[in-house]
Image 1: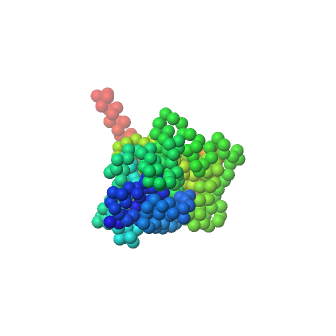
Image 2: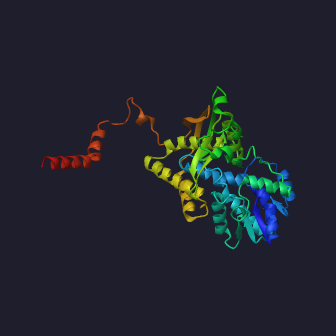
Image 3: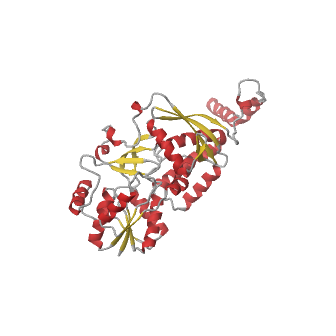
Length: 400
């Protein structure tokens, strides 16, 4: 038997390799997808092989991840439960697609993952695999083995001689990619406990951020960022540069108790500095390029898209339809936005060079303009006509 494992090198997937070989007598291909995580991939490869993997495949998917998965979230301003910028959720369909591709390359009979039975990732991985290759068997060790938690995993890793980074003193579960880094576990599971300073790995505390603000200019074309401070950049470069700028000003921190798909509330800590800046900039640009009805529709579409992504339904007809509509709506969203970074905040302070702006200074000004104030009277009479009739009928009913 051959099994393709979604491998991160973390505690869960590190112990899964020897567990799979022990329980399935299988050959294991470790698929470690490069989505921009700060990882020493030669070391990761060596670690996987030392843990018992028969082969390792590490596809570089940074460009694809940002262009095809993260940027559509910016275009839709998609936030799960109004806050979470989907850093982990949006990477999962790409990782699952590469896992299926790796299984085909390796002629594997099954795929495996390290997601727990309590989490969302098990759904995201498995539904994606079911959509892309229904013939593959799916193995989820967390739903099968006798290990009860991360303490048991660390003990099993020691028994198997597998090196891991987690310790009982720092048992955080982290997920990192070019878009964000998330932190769960340990003291973070107690909503009454403030987040310790040692949790954060990207961003400086806003309290310790520079006292002087920094401004960045982000240029968009059809809702997608293309340049930073006048310099054209590819997608990974631009996001990495914004991550650095935002991180040094404490931008992009979020602590959230969220509703998992399986019905459990969980507490996570997220750092998304570049994404936070891009969402703020994109929104500022849409305020001058979308009319009121389109903006309202896109708010609903963004919420719906966020729910689909969070729930693991990237490979669904509705997601395809929504992202097609989002791309169309972003047709006029081009221009440059100035964003001020200061003490944890990313504030869009100006938009300029907007070829499709709907904002007319001549109409908006309080000074003399082409706007004829007399027109407002007729408009109000027609707009309020139904209210007027309702008021008249209500008054007659009361007095009769």
